[in-house]
Image (cartoon, rainbow, N blue to C red; front, top):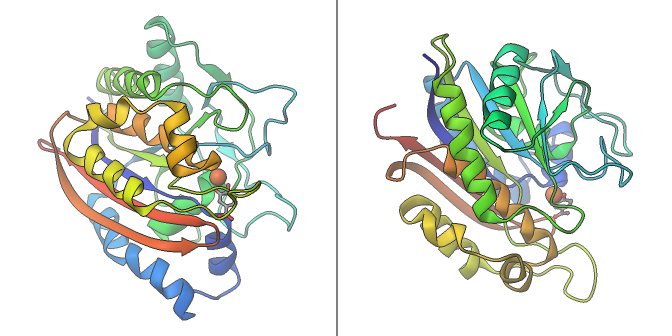
Length: 281
Ligand code: DHB
Ligand code: FE
């Protein structure tokens, strides 16, 4: 049977992708960020997941405001990196796992989570930057990727509780898939940041670190955070953190913390990163 072996949590700043693509990783500002992912790259090269489910948000790239699905599961064979205004990132095409994705869609929809099935979608920095941070710059991504896009762009995003429960349903789906696949689940976006308005540039390290602590040891505490609290404490775009709860919900209540990293700033954003493993992986 397939199983979820670990959760990877990371911010997804577009400037990180630009730094990588333009050969700036050795600059001290960026070395501070990329240095924090060296151990993670070693870890994932050892763990070698067959499939990564990447919970991310589209930034009005694949979905304009004409259609805004709350949860959209990528069931296609492949997903092309999107042009976000500077040409597509020079990263490999993302290869999907249509069979597992269709199985997850069936299982969670019959469990009463109304996912949107997406058979064609370009993927923006929300998905490609976490892949770059974890896998570097390979010619091909080393595993299949199932994108799960969550609406955090247009009010109302889903609640943290809904995200957490969807994670549980995804776990149940994965564990009822007959092939022996090792699956990792990524929660991406966040941490504290606000990119426009009077509070632009807001970063709240205390809130971010408490969120990382809660994810690692007391997920119920993170699940209870309301939208208004994310907005007040972590800035308007800090709401992206609810996506981490989908990934957290797919793990055991008690997990092993493998690795943690936090630095500020990267562009307008705090960079937070956590790796959690199920105890029996
Ligand atoms: C920034 C961060 C984001 O999450 C994003 O989607 C766009 C910009 C930033 O910090 O610049
Ligand atoms: Fe974002």
